Image (tube, rainbow, N blue to C red; front, side, top):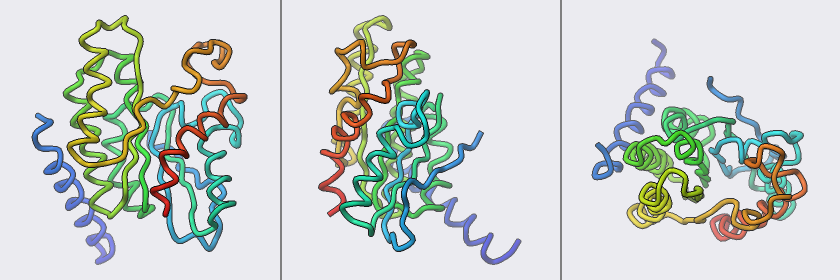
Length: 224
């Protein structure tokens, strides 16, 4: 084992331990990361870890809210770049498994965590979701990154208790770890059926700018 590889492995183990320690009290296909409009002079990075809603499912590469946000950030401050590490179908367990490698690779100044929708669609235990998101927040904080936690809401077909608990998970984590919270990613378009593709799950290209503006309103103060 080379010295460099050994150092990376030790850093990875430290982050794993730190993230799990921060999560105490909640517990018990590697995607291609895409740097969007990242100028060569960029010194600071926003890392987005989400699912298909952030990966731009059904859209061209430049149509999703993440690349649109990257364009806006680059225009305002070329010292920032955006890396989209979102992957369609991702759960919080997948994000938790990937987060250490992603934050070590990109050394972000801000991490946007936009996961949980697929957990709810599969009816996965909320305790596991809490633990996974807590670990992602902990790993991000250990590399010095600010965190924007982006929540979701679900229809009541899984039962009122699960639905309430799902939404409360984001609020509780934001309070516990003192991170910024955007309660509902799809809030600007949720009531508009025409804003969604034929699957009634993924937003169309036409409304991605509204999602960008929604997220950017919470993110902008974190870039200063």
